[in-house]
Image (tube, rainbow, N blue to C red; front, side, top):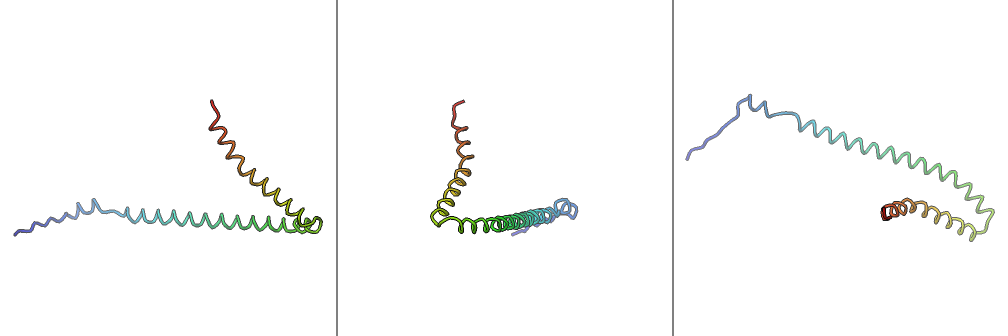
Length: 103
């Protein structure tokens, strides 16, 4: 039995070897790092905004609690929640109407 072994020349090997795999790995890793940093910055801004909202709303809630009985407070907060739900649903409804209306 004979064995035939072929080896590339150094010139042919150099033509096909590159650092592309290393470059692509760095690009993918940098992309993930960028996405993680972006998410963390967004999370920090969202927490900051929410804490400001809570700080502003807490005194208003205290004034409401001292002025009105509990059932009036509950009704007020329920109306606010319903209005907020309607505001969030409105863009979806108008988009559906536009898409379903005959042209």
